[in-house]
Length: 188
Image: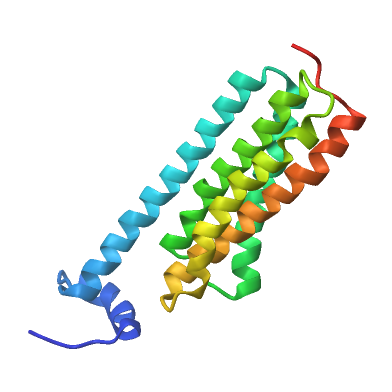
């Protein structure tokens, strides 16, 4: 029997209809199922991205201090993603979740540029600052335009990328050099 139900009514009635052996069909119930599948897929993808990045850090870093230093901008990038969404009043959506692996990748890229060079060059922070600024800056510029989108999902993605990448870059450019000066990496 065809019925037009709003989302709240559909959510409220679904358990009762399913308990009676029935089910709702149409675009709203289908979208809810797809949304559930996508949520799980995104969680798995983000977890795999994080595990992959940790494997790269462990393999190429080859020291606890290197790994700890690389984790500083990585963790900051995630704080920046969620902080920017909260600050901007944007909800966590599937699109804004895509900012997590983007920010992870850029944060590790810039940190590795600095940390790898710091093993063999005393002035590594100064020498890689411009390269890291360009690397992160192009990502910031590319996703920054989305902040002005009329579509809330793209606006959230842009804002989350801006927050995550910017915070990771700031810590890579200013905090990691201080840590490296105080506790340098051993030469390999």
